[in-house]
Length: 343
Ligand code: KG4
Ligand code: ZN
Figure 1 (cartoon, helix red, strand yellow):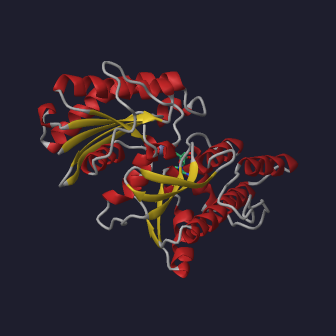
Figure 2 (cartoon, helix red, strand yellow; figure 1 turned 90 degrees about the vertical axis):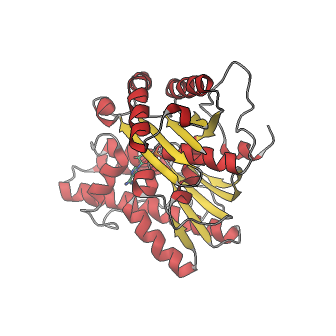
């Protein structure tokens, strides 16, 4: 079974080919970072237009890299949400048209399902059930995953997502866009603890998060004094430490709450080195096994969408959204746990 995956939910155009038996055959990502850099964030209209420019060449490249032809495809999977409406529509119309022309099914895939299943692409893949920590630019969630399509929400952020907090803090520190990697780089030159930031909701007794207060605390410190380069690095390090401390504590609390011993980390913030190091140490102490996607599959990509398509077909899952003959829709807002409920 050969599935083409199309990802266009935000500022990366991702295309990939996944084989049911052989796994990932080829994948390619075009990042729009340079396009949006001048604006300090993603401009939705520019994102949509660029997806249109990139999709066809990327699809041709991926097919050529894998030595396949369009006629070899058994299905076309695409991100149907959540994300930017216009950007999603580009991928959805491309995928639906291609599938229609080839006479194969088009599979709408939930973007976060793609992220949380992506560690299963690795050789050392976790078995079900596990707890997933989803940490992206738009979401911070803890889910109990019992199988493909079976997701129970354990906790989530009440305001900003972890990635969003990194991005907003980067803006305050004039580090540009995208913020996460830039804050992480600056943090490596600083020392946490020299400034004091809160650890929001660390002792809340539940599995929810809140990150919006952190950027306000960073802003207050920046306004209070003119900082040297070294102080800015210390502030970045303390900010990163605050986010990482809360993520690690709540993720391990969720694993204990679910009575499990496996944790999967997915989404862009999962690429953060400090998060990985701290989590690995704490998890080893707690007897919890942690699984990450390959570093290039942490941020948005088509491979996770193609792979989610393969897994859904193999598991005989019903479509994520009921199909309507002759039309399709995208879901800019789409709670992941709805996938577990009958359509
Ligand atoms: O999963 P993703 O690529 O896109 C969404 O679905 O949102 O995640 C992007 C987010 C951005 O907020 C970005 O700043 C953050 O992940 N990010 C990082 C790192 N790399 C990406 N945050 C912290 N440290 C990193 N190394
Ligand atoms: Zn994502």
